[in-house]
Image 1 (tube, one colour):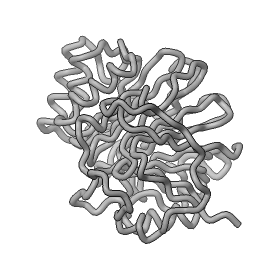
Image 2 (tube, one colour; image 1 turned 180 degrees about the vertical axis):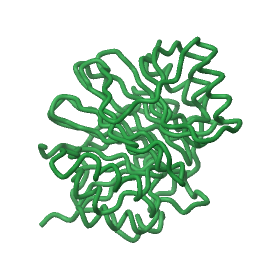
Image 3 (cartoon, helix red, strand yellow; image 1 turned 90 degrees about the vertical axis):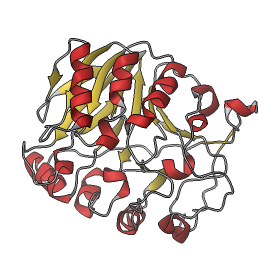
Image 4 (cartoon, one colour; image 1 turned 135 degrees about the vertical axis):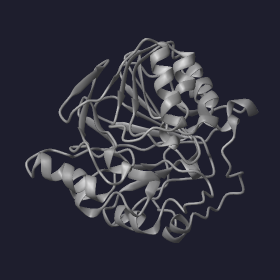
Length: 329
């Protein structure tokens, strides 16, 4: 993997009427303690609002021949929009109350249809908003991790799938999907039953050119280890960007997985001042030990990542925030 370039967008949101500016971030890292405690030095509001789901024009340039990954600021949940060669995929959709905001964001990105929808696992903070997407856009394919129980979140999601006369597919490790010039490969889960539903999360490797993104859902240490054992030591888990498991919980993203992935960048999707205290100190410490550059939606709001197949650029909404970066030697 090549050493990639991060860019910080210093722009007010489109609703403020300010123009977008881009500059290279400082190489001096933010203070570790500020990251670990969740405190920030800015005075901007920390709650996710409808306005914080800003347009692409605010965040990043419109680039053709690229893979664009939107890490949407959807509170204490996951929601990711992928675009490649005019085709779109969505991975998870946070809670139901974020459904309309996600739909509006997708409209602003020019989405007319969804080639692939992924529900990594049946928790409400991952599938709750997907029925709103199913109501707003035609969807061609739906993937889901194993569903081991049924509740209102699950039933509403399945009803939405049925309303489009679709069938949920439950992919197996090694299955692939083509999104434009990008390839999505299923790496986990490698078992169909776990005591903890989080370990049933679909784990996806997205490759575009020489760049790779690993999405881990909420998979925890047991599932991580089983997945690594299943593929063996010779399998290439390396990825440039790691979507940190379980919103930065201590139960995910352990050293063994990090040693296999060796990411340059990590993105944590969690809500500002959330009740769980995410991200926790332990995974942040592990990421810092591995000298991974860390982005957080609870501080940076919407984060957009663009790969041209060789280089990766990051843009984000909160002009007062910056990623944690390892100290230069």
